Amino acid sequence: MRKYVVLGLCLVLLLSAVQAFGAGLTGKNEISAAAAWVKVSEDGGNGEITTTLVGASYGRYISENLEFKLDAIYANFEMGGDVNAWLIGPAVAWNFTPQTPSSVIPYIGVGALYANIEVSGSDSSLNLEYFAGAKFFIGGDYTTANKAAFLEYRHTNVSMFDTNVKLDLVWAGLSCFF
Picture 1 (cartoon, rainbow, N blue to C red):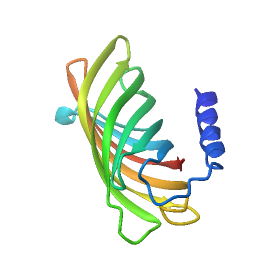
Picture 2 (picture 1 turned 120 degrees about the horizontal axis):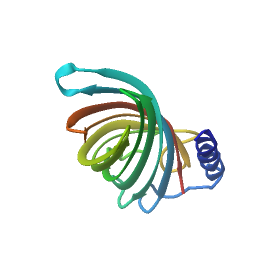
Picture 3 (picture 1 turned 180 degrees about the vertical axis):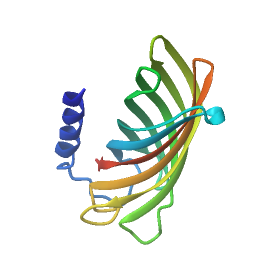
Picture 4 (picture 1 turned 60 degrees about the vertical axis):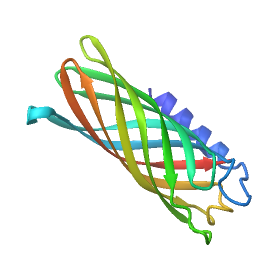
């Protein structure tokens, strides 16, 4: 697993060398790699754990404000057994792009998230997710920079083995624009 995380981060760094200069975000692509701290809690307060996870996403800006995304997340943690979880799903984000170019862009978003969880058996679910965060462009504003750091809060529920699990993520990473 470490090998794939390192490979993904190397890919992001290589792509950061691609220049993405232009009039703004419209038509640009975004590739992100991230890690998250996550708090997992069951309904009724029966259990709670914290762990880290890794993920990647691809996005395409349809306009200065609207981005369509596809996110993939992997987690491995201990909760009544060794748990492996894959989450994947489409999302849409609204970026609050200012009229005057800025190095910080806040955003909000919503999406669907398919989760496949394996403990002693396997279960999957499809749920709504929502998120909010900010992109901090490195080396310029959003019209001139081709990379950004981001910080994001995400929330979703995952139904697994007749239990509703709430996921609250503090998500941080790097994005490359081309």
